[in-house]
Image (tube, rainbow, N blue to C red; front, side, top):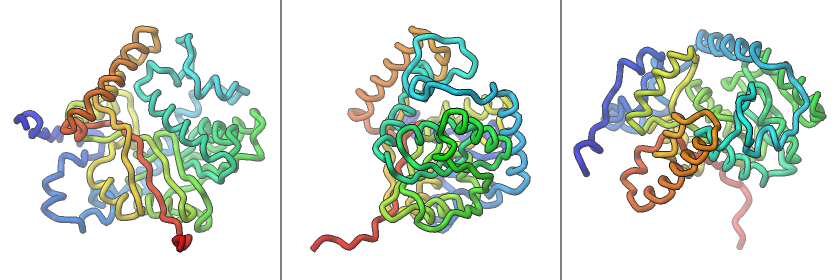
Length: 325
């Protein structure tokens, strides 16, 4: 292995200015202290999010909701699933030119398999994902810490004819009121990295899942040194609150809580399509090309896999059904 690949820069300045320290900045410390240091994800003094952080994230979410267009009736599949050929519309999100598009597509394709099931949409925000899940025939419960987001999600569901299929509540991940073994699936739209810093997040997700249930997320990780350096700068420039990248101890903690954890569709080069955000034909081609580079090189050069910064995460609760004789 080359010296460059062994070098893991700490970038403490950028991380400290976001309020969170990247997990990869403390890999050696985690190894030295052993498994006992990750009974909670990250050190509690640094990552155990407080009521003050809850208030800050709630205020940030409510500012974003206030700036959204009013809830309206939409063509759900065209709006949220299929790529558009036009661009420049306010609120446009789902396009192959967006570096996250293929992960949304992977996520939504997988979720379609759970038609007829009971699904929990965590940190639902304005309710886009909840609407898609209901459209696919699922019974949806959703929650968010922001009352304004919950009100918007309820109006959005009602206007689109899914008011009875989506139950949206104001709730805190630290104190979920849902009963045990209530849901077949727990999922969210890029939500886990906002929630995992709160104590009891994964434990509560595990509790409300039925035996055999699964939690599904695509998420940002901090294993690429350049992305780890650039993201906090972008968060600070845009004024984002509560942003965070999952790291090694988060994966360790997930494997302690859940019975099976699978990381797939790791992205190394495709992540850099974020520098080609505007959904023009050229940028769509660049995004597809970078994804092909990942698909071609990562199986052949496995050492690159350790530097992924986006991936699809599946966490499963073991079924209690007796094994067949």
